Amino acid sequence: MDGYEDKRRSFLRKLGFTLGGTLTASSLISANIRESSSDINITPDQKEFMVHYEKWMDEFIEVIKVQKVDPENVENNKNIVLLSERSKKWQTKLHDYMNDENFARYYMVASERMTLEI
Image 1: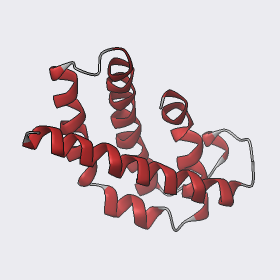
Image 2 (image 1 turned 180 degrees about the horizontal axis):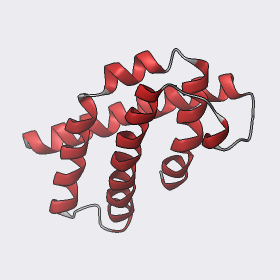
Image 3 (image 1 turned 45 degrees about the horizontal axis):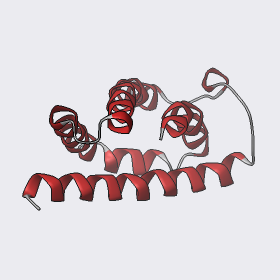
Image 4 (image 1 turned 90 degrees about the vertical axis):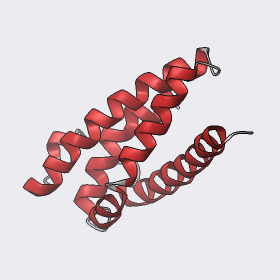
């Protein structure tokens, strides 16, 4: 197994833990609340973060779709690694924001699209 494959597997494993933890925390916070993200008040900094996160999520959803039908697609696998590298830059900020119950609910609602794809 080469370094690329190791990084890819490591990313997918970390993503699983991150999404699993986020989904668990979000579900505990939300207690099955069904609401629109527009109904949740977050700070301007958090809104700016979510704009960037949702753009990243849209890109990630696309690579997930390709991964499902063509797991050996080299270009797509490279994109998965690139997206994982980009996400590392904002993981600390996301973790901090998740301490805010409103942000955590907003994040959960916004992330539902990606969760359904995975």
